[in-house]
Image (cartoon, rainbow, N blue to C red; front, side, top):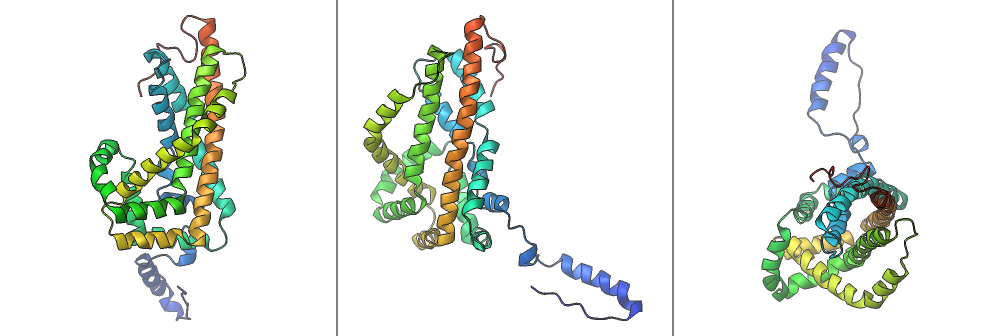
Length: 294
């Protein structure tokens, strides 16, 4: 929107300025004045709220580790809270997105995410992160699996988002975090040997991929279950655009880089704990008697 200023009599300047201020206060910002930063894009699309997911995945892996006693598990969960920091991962995502977007992409993406459908999509995706969703998904699974159109739409969305591939990579990195803890617990001063884990993952990658795909498709169908199919088709069209594909690429590249970064902090924190634990009865720094409740 372009605003033109015309000459007015000197004695009317103040009144004119006040009137103009009142008018502009009630108008939306011009496109050039709107916040088109990558941060605004990540917030409007709900990506910023998804950064704690990796810590939750690591904690789930720790919960399922039969080799940890309860006190040890609580200490490791505290280390996870301190080292697997969402803000660190977010910064990598921001940089990853910034690197791949081309001129005009941010404005195009922000326009879509600010639309009624874009806002509804973001709302549904954030609801999928809430507590209690897993039990609701299990209850809805039979009906969803029987809905061929929904499942086919979920499959197309998965292809556009590469959600299965990303999910498997994150799951493997959560398993890596668990492996780091086990290795360092046994040998606090030795380098972590990942050869056995890598061989195991390679051997089971295909069945793991199939399982992840089944879970991903069901999760996508559940997330968008209340969205009419024609709205889902509109979402598919948006995800097919070059701007949206670049955005997805930047998010995933940045997310994985951020996870690798916090995993280094995780390894350092775990090693500090076990080296101290081996040296003293209760340890210093990560004392079992001083771990705060989460």
